Length: 589
Image 1 (cartoon, rainbow, N blue to C red):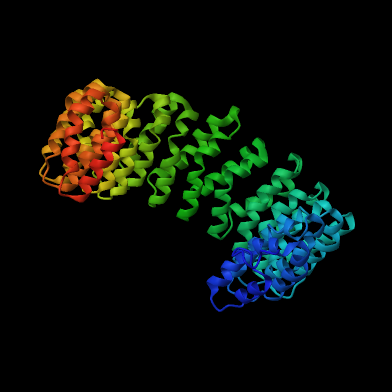
Image 2: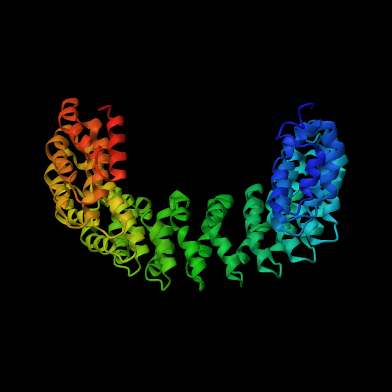
């Protein structure tokens, strides 16, 4: 401690107190973030007797300061003397768990949960459990909502009498007058059920679940749905039908769309939890209704789950269920009025082809894919194209090629540049599936057109795309098809297009190899070193640096070096800088 005053990072407690009382929020925040350093300087004894009481007394501050404090205290166990003294951290965290700002309360609860594991079973009953009780019976709803998150961490390690008290407190909070508290209880119901003994899950949790699932507030009911999925995984199969399914059936038809949305969103988890029999009898009709729901958000959430739901159906009856119950609903959604629903469906519908096999895909799914490829919404077309590989495995892409082309061309010329960008990223995949002849005939001109797009991100992606295409189709194809067109752009009146030539050469030199680079590309780069625009000239220097490793040493010395030396004495500062950098990187000095 002798050098503490002189060492800038170790504040004495007096300075800390001054800083924590300073008017400047940033100063207070900084000192809170240095708490662990301060605690180290003070030692465990003074941290317990001076620092923690001081922090507990001064919890009236800006939310961001309190948030930082709540986070820091969760990592303080060793700084107060290890697990046997960890209970000293409870008073400040208890105060933080009752403040008005939700983010601070949540962080305090997170820290309390963290340090609960470091309490011994005795300390847990003597110090931690009374804190949970105080919070659960607090006057303000803030403390009661915080208590909900703490039951599950202390329940497994306390005696059976204390367990009974904890269950009673949780029951009380589930029927609290304040909706916020019931919401907190509903959100933790599944987690609490997991640590309870099965007999209490049946006797206590099910009745709480039923009550919360029919709460007057839809925000409580939708959280109960999530809990229902967790509870279903805990119960034996024979109890599910009687104890959980009636409530979940009711939730799937709830008058509030938010609750139905939650059922749709959790449908796959629910399906895994209840098993094949209940899925066949109960979930299939429920899923059909969700796919036909009057609210677009619900239909979109259900559409998102189509592939997963079909994959998890029992194998013996999978195809029959899909063909008779699910496919008719899917066919309706393809022409849905809402673009989000169609887009959600388009992102998963291709996956059905692997489940249904070749014949069913050609007969039933192919017309749907073709309809979606002609959809007026670009996202729908894009989602179909981005998942083409699933179909390619089953029926081959040729079946789609006639409709695919117009869709690709439209997307490639879409007014939104992000749509154009997305289709470029799928080009190498499409090229691999369509083959080189088809690609050259139909898509090559598109790829070249992107190189002169007015958006830089598109030109950059198009350059990258060329490199991937050459990797797929080989250097000879590049020499005959791509390189002449790229080099032709070197004479373009627009200097941005001339620069794109250089970017393409950078990307292609590596995949095309030494011969093509030296013979065809290098002369063009040298010619461009005399360009009138300085930006082009300094990019020539950068290009020579990039393609240098591909060239042989003789060429570097006799051809590249003189050009770089000429650029190094250019009048433009940037051209000089990049030329000198290239000379040193290529060791030509």
